[in-house]
Image (cartoon, rainbow, N blue to C red; front, side, top):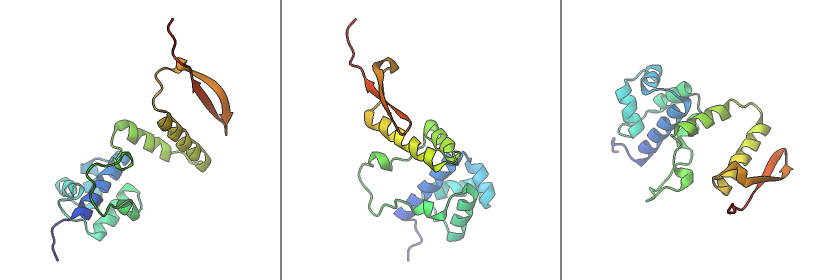
Length: 152
């Protein structure tokens, strides 16, 4: 059996990096927590080196994620271009949003926030708040209607 890393190693490494960034943990800090050099952690994240099961458990403990997280949405085949839902969230705004979301204890509030974000994503970006007018409320969330622009 080959000891060279394969696609699953790269995918697990990518999920390690994603979890680390979402938690705001540096490579140096995580590597110290799990007892490896930060260079070794870089190799794990790039998929250049395989991660042992015991090391993966240590990483999941250090990042406070379930070990199954590293295998979620595991792709069996590589697609040419990723779809928008496959692109990892690495922007500062994405990490800030996820971090704030995890601090919310109420499942009801979380569901409402997800619904709100989905509605905004479906509508696209609003050019100007002045282009909106309230048209009602559903489950405590205001619904807005865009006004058509007109020449003044």
